[in-house]
Length: 367
Image 1 (cartoon, rainbow, N blue to C red):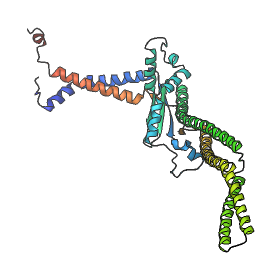
Image 2: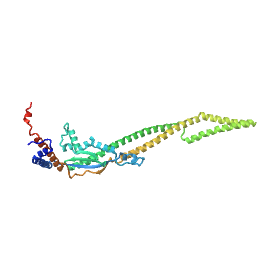
Image 3: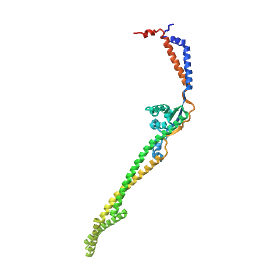
Image 4: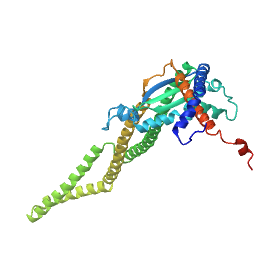
């Protein structure tokens, strides 16, 4: 019987001609898949869900209620991506390997050259961290041991929290170390200034700036008194006052000028120089005290923030021991095998029917 190979009805006739073999092959594939699904070792998937915490929660301003920035409890997209990246870090994968003796569990020779790569490839196929539609992170572990899968998932989440916190604490520790160095340097500077101030006070005998200022102001009064006496002397001369009065005024003026000259060239000069140096050093000491007070205040805040227990993530659901296996899914396995068998059967039938008239021997022996 010849078929019109261009016509769809001819294709259908060919298929219906072979319908029983096609049905038998399809059903047989389904039965075999069902048997295989019962024989193969099942795998179980445990899942823990958590949210990324905002790093700003661990800042001193957030802890002490300072700053005008809005406080966010949950992390942004960058914080989520950071946790996912850390979730596949060598530190975390090494931890799982050692903690659960995965070389032995996966039956991999740890001494072989490619043993490490094989282990990581096998682990990563069973270990996933993904962001779900609610911006939470799902960490899943699949294993033939359902209890182990739950333990690994929870352990991986806790280790991820530890690693993320370690990065934040490392940054805070660098800031604390910087403050400690600044405080040490400024404390040494203040001691140098303080020692210099003490030395100058001893040198000039100035221990009370107020008393010294009064002393200087007293000699300023002498200058004023001299001017008054000079004015009186001029008036006395104009009015032809007695010579004794004029002589007395002159003696007083000369005495005061001599006293003032001695003071200006000796004690007064030293006092003026001493007060000038003491004033400059006192200002420098006060500035260093203010800076040290600010640095110590910030240092104590960062030190307190560093010691406060931290969480880089908020746990929504812990991983529980799974009751339903994740693989193989018997229904999907059977239906998939039947579909593939059915498609291959159709393809085989069409190849057979549409190549009956081909002389394969002639084609084989063609030169």
